[in-house]
Length: 305
Ligand SMILES: CCC(=O)SCCNC(=O)CCNC(=O)[C@H](O)C(C)(C)COP(=O)(O)OP(=O)(O)OC[C@H]1O[C@@H](n2cnc3c(N)ncnc32)[C@H](O)[C@@H]1OP(=O)(O)O
Image (tube, rainbow, N blue to C red; front, side, top):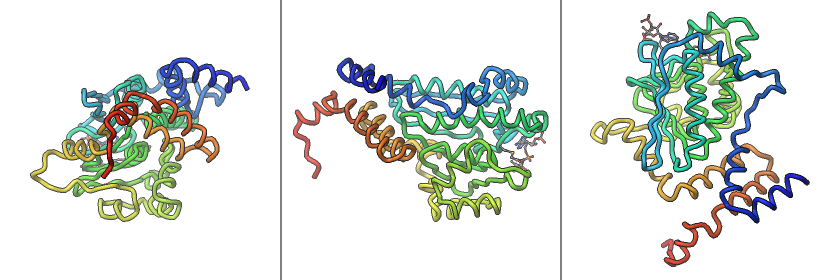
């Protein structure tokens, strides 16, 4: 009832207020203090395991590139990189011009999972669960960003690195690259939300095979089961990053509010029960209906031949 009143008020009020309301909704995390999760406490623990960085480059075109950068450890995630990632995701949430995001690893390889040195030091179940909640919150927010995201996989995406690829809308693989959920070999299962997302991407049968067999997924198999969208072929066609940018630009062409609306309606269809998804779709529709792009298209009497 109260929410309805707020919604009506916002609808009657500015379009910006409603957009901000929707944005806040998409920032909701999986875990909060209600679940015994104390963000600051775990941040402090993670910061005690430094090394590497997460770099964010935003471009005027509305595309951003997020780079996992710890080449001397094959881009494994140190504790401070987990905190960095959370901060970069916050920055992206506030980027009103954002339309597309490419997540890549530095120096020709994607990510070798969590830093095993940090894993050894945090090996008690309580700390492990806290790290897991922190990463689930961050990766859920990454997947829910109102922009179309791509994991550009070169080299290896192992363990948590494989999980990270599933927190993007699409996976593009370079020839010779591998995605491998190695968790079973480590006596583990995914904990960063990778299993839940994998089931939604490739179905439960394929997910069982990939996790149960710790299968090395090459580009051919990834295409076959729907884990990857494309293999970035062609030596002369620029760097893998340029090829990924070209691939993504097809889907991010157009005004930011429209591209963001596209992502929001697909996201709600993916995550919400049908009635709720339909209501969200209506709300998002209301943010673009009569908006500048819509008015311009009407004025130019655009044809779609
Ligand atoms: C969430 C659950 C998880 O993510 S559990 C972590 C899962 N990942 C792993 O177990 C990866 C273990 N590493 C490997 O299998 C190999 O190092 C891979 C990545 C295949 C690379 O092999 P190779 O090309 O021969 O290089 P290398 O072994 O000499 O590695 C270079 C340096 O990088 C390091 N490294 C690699 N991965 C990690 C990691 N996850 N954590 C910490 N350090 C890692 C290696 O130890 C090696 O370091 P150094 O040169 O010996 O000092």
